Image 1 (spheres, rainbow, N blue to C red):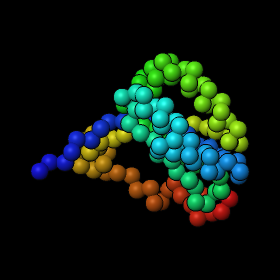
Image 2: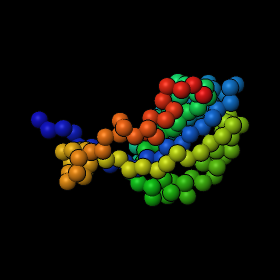
Image 3: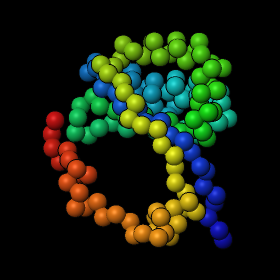
Length: 140
């Protein structure tokens, strides 16, 4: 039996610093079944949202929004500009800050090859890279 096919995805990761009094409301609105997901589900190009809560920095959250392509999100924003802007404006009061962490593409097993990257060179050992581990285990 073969593995199910993997969907390629384009991912936008956002970081939020949520106000102390707004944690519950933020989680309801930004969670997988929240208002943002309900809005995005109007598009068949939307693949889902994940909400992450930092366990070491109180009030820090990440959202991971998955789309089939950046163009799909752009088109969605154009088609639903009023709804998007209204929800964004409503949610501003919940956060002290909001920033894009980055925009990423998913790597499927077929794309990665047998070594998890360029099959001509071995994967990098990040365990000796001090910058890779900065901040781990430290309280902020």
